[in-house]
Amino acid sequence: MADGPAARLREVHLRIEGAARAAGRDPAEVRLLAVSKTFGAEAVAAMARCGQTEFGENYVQEGVAKIGALRAEWPALCWHFIGPLQSNKTRDVAAGFDWVHSIDRVSVARRLSAQRPPPGEHGVPAPLQVCLQVNVSGEASKSGVVPEELPGLAREVARLPGLRLRGLMCIPAPATDAAAQRAPFARLRELRDDLAARLGLSLDTLSMGMSADLEAAVLEGATIVRVGSALFGERPARAQR
Image (tube, rainbow, N blue to C red; front, side, top):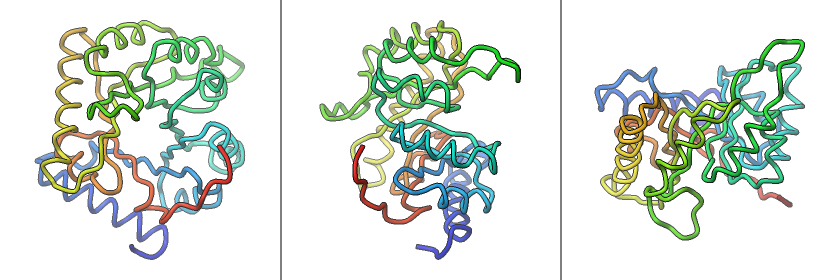
């Protein structure tokens, strides 16, 4: 791995650029989400000083604490919640994050909609940008709506106030073969395109691809890649959730 946050960030951007060029895409179409879970606020600040502006968190309390610690110095950072979301944790996510990638049931979406802060003295807050997580690999242990139930969920989420449905997210089963890596990403793209056509929705986001398979995701149309270890290194153990 490249040494130092600037070098690691540059290396990941080069990987994204190479895959985008190979797909005949503009690299600017692909946003890099730095997954900072289990790393402290100082690691996020170091990456922010290198020009990274979007960060992803998997754990609500950890993410909220980081956002609070960095808000004064880095008010323009964009925060994405990308982990499984329990109903009793939605209020903090609705209030503190800009994006949620992991909606897989309408009950959580309704709570996020109801708990998004109302207009205040600083103006109306932007809608919470959301993606629906799809279980494209059919793994029983994975979160995500099954493809057959996706249209119904999308229809419900798209009409909720305070939310803006942007697209789909997936975390497929790990694979090392390039073709096996690309298959679930192609499936997610097909589901997004079909959903947009069927429901008349404008869906511009495919959140897919991580450190080990971001090239395959970009080749299949990813607009956000979620990269952690390639940017931050090996994750420290978490004492508790």
